[in-house]
Image (cartoon, rainbow, N blue to C red; front, side, top):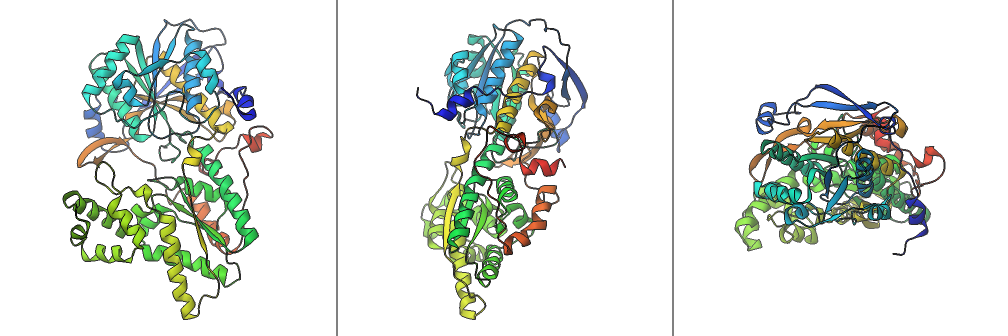
Length: 540
């Protein structure tokens, strides 16, 4: 297989590990018993075998070689959307297992959780692993979005695990995938199958985080990729001085990516969905707030700028959220769109009529398999350009706006999901995988691999395990209350948002752009190994 010069050099990169994982053995330190973040009685009832387990921390063990443990076979699954560093998690699992016993084997289930159910797999050998070290993507075994929720699926998993002699599974995924991993762990303990289940925190969206999971892997790399391109656009905007660039950024439920990219590049505008919701802003108010900045700059003869828009903004605007909910209900029972629209409440009908025709069509025609609006397909950036343009035209007619407005739309999403991981993500992911192998070696189940103190040098990182039940609460999904890992949205009293809020007026009126440039893999550690601005601010 032909590879690029960069791939060849990156293949030789040796990811760094925390001190606790560098020696021949690891000392496990048990913390206090844990409880879920909410709904403790309900979660405990649903997870009697895995609820209340202690947080585990790894300390440096003795320098002598560890006694070889009996050989085991382990399975690994990549679940959900891609994120940079997944291959290094698998590499870390593989190397950690081989360190426990060279006879240990690792099997990869193909195409995500569906591979476990359908018994599709390959053995991951050293030759295969070495081909994928420090590379982006999930193509080593593929990923998928099959949800492990039914006992029939669990039992099919037991069948293939017994056939291959697998006694532990590692599920690499986001909040939903790790919730399912915990359900699987509980079931396998209850049925005395002898199969452990360990999770690893993945998602570029950054919404799988808490005190013990400081960041999800892939977030660092994706934000650096997006920030590079945003910086390039800023340089172009500042050169041509005639375009407003509206950049929609991936992140369905949370604005972490938008906030991080804003901290890295200092745009004129960055909308934070969580703030819009907290202030109960209408779509008109969001449009007017953007127009205010465009007007101020235009009246200062600066007819250019950059605005960052989170992918999930539409769902956070209260009136739009109500409209989408009404449309979902109406179109579930009425195939004739015009008849369905007649069932809208007066308030929602007014909102719908205010939308550009193209956006209105997207709300009624693009449905997912559950019959819901596919919010990620709504071109929010184009919606805002059109509505801001109309608002500015009205202001020009009134004589308050003297500038010119020309908007260009961009959406950065898939470009960042499979990038070659940054040094931070290469090290972090490898450490997560190695941590998972230690948890398996210690017979643990229902835990998520955890690596903390991430603002420090990798040698000072703290590895261990956190019970998945500790992160759970009860939420309504498809009409039923279910246990799920609580999503971490941008907190308006958090240090990253507060810092952004303290600077945005200055960034709005001045051209304070920062140009991060491409990800650097070699050079000063201050450039190559730096974590996200979000992490540095949170831990400062």
